[in-house]
Amino acid sequence: MRVLITGANGFVGRQLALQLLSQGSVRGCPIDSLLLLDTQLGGFPDDPRLRLYSGSVTDAALIRRVLADGVDIVFHLVSIPGGAAEHDYSLGYQVNLLASLELLDQLRNKCCPPVLVYASSVAVYGAILPARMDETAIAQPQLSYGAHKLMVETALCDLARRGEVDGRALRLPGIVARPWQPNGLRSAFMSDLLHAFADGQTYCCPVSPEATAWWMSAKCCVNNLIQAAELEGLAQDTERVWQLPVLHLSIAQVIDALAARFGEVRRSLINFAPDSDLQALFAAHPPLKTPRARAAGFNHDGNAAALVRNALNLPAKQRRAP
Image (cartoon, rainbow, N blue to C red; front, side):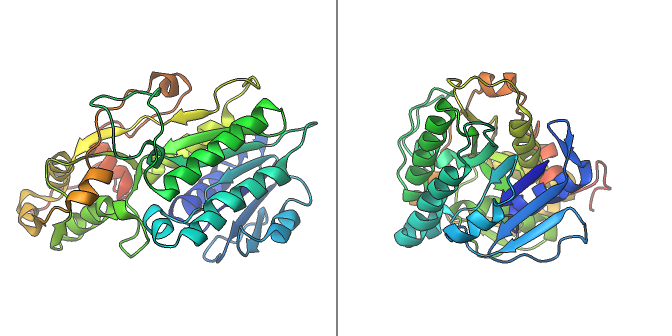
């Protein structure tokens, strides 16, 4: 089994690579080669199954070289984040849209269509959301990032219909806790809040305590990506896009879970200066029901306490701070 991860040096990509190396197989077959593609690659274990390809996903010749010996499964994770893609439209257009379409085209194989798991985003819905949502919600992206994700979903479904790529797209919510550093994500406050509370540092939250968002840990995200690859027997006309189950939590609920873990005294380190535009786009999310995704084996973290534990890689039990 030959498996490729694009964006392998990213927050989710690196954890996915390590998980696949650890479990050693996917779809019931041993992983013989794990191909990692990103602009920079470093710090991975010395493992004979690894094949590292440094370069841009926009380089069509590099993609041809990576795929030259064939590939069975592709996890396509690489992207320019929403805020950065909005600021630099050309960069987002090249990476998020054109490079994804080129990869899809190079993967086409009528005789043995490869499995492609595509990391889409809840950004496809835009900011105007109904009071309650389910998997039938209409996509109305209001950022170029979301528009490009929706376009790639459409192309993926078309090639699945043609029997040329066995595609599966997952709409990901906010994934936490990303490293505490500039990353072009306007939803970075979700991760920054977790890190600040855990580290005992002051933090000015750019959304209100009542703001609600959709949350998922990187650990849970990786499990869902692998589950998408494991799905068997999808008909060509099967709907290939899943909205993942999410934890619908307010900032106050997340702070409650953090305080239960790290101590009530740290609440005083958090203050608020809400940005109305930011809150409208990323922190005014309604409840979201996903029975179809649940039936397919996808899950969220379970509850706020488990989210904190998984997102910060904490042990199952830890002594409460004074």
